[in-house]
Image (cartoon, rainbow over all chains, first blue to last red; front, side, top):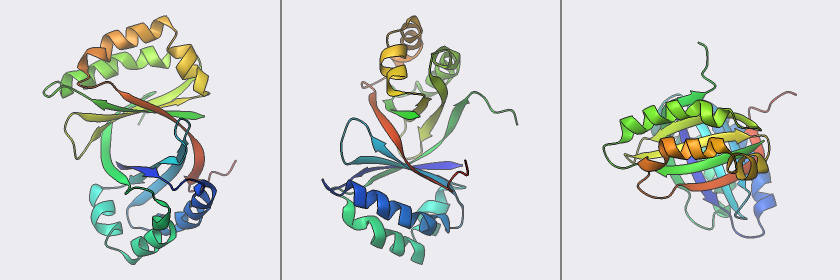
Length: 103
Length: 103
């Protein structure tokens, strides 16, 4: 599993509308091949700042599959207008989970 | 639940030792009151860059409870020497999880 980590900054005053748009956009990203789950979180310290965490089966499921799909255009259409700065997107691989999973 | 998000940058060449130290330090943070779980992830794009995600029951469990405890001194002792720059720590509250949990 690869974790997509996107740091998002939303125009002041548009936080509530952004959160509603993200709820509307959730099924769009969830329809992508290799998508596992995602969550949106609001920064306590900085208004307008959000963290989007998306779990993908592989890096390419996001960078090639989703980004090259019609669903991505729809996703951007729904949420792209809210960003005050371009989203900073990185990918992270697993090192350690605690408590350790018994599997 | 509050998510602590720490962006970590480790001295070049010390990645393996840092990961081992984090495994050793896991029970230390896990012993804190209000701690729920945590994970460490390695950035795919940038060598030496890590993301630490810690779930706490409340913001204060981290900022007051853990940081003011003897366990925090032990935690810092085990991992503090690895950082090339000071960790960037923020806290995030829940907005949206998908698929939605049935609870």
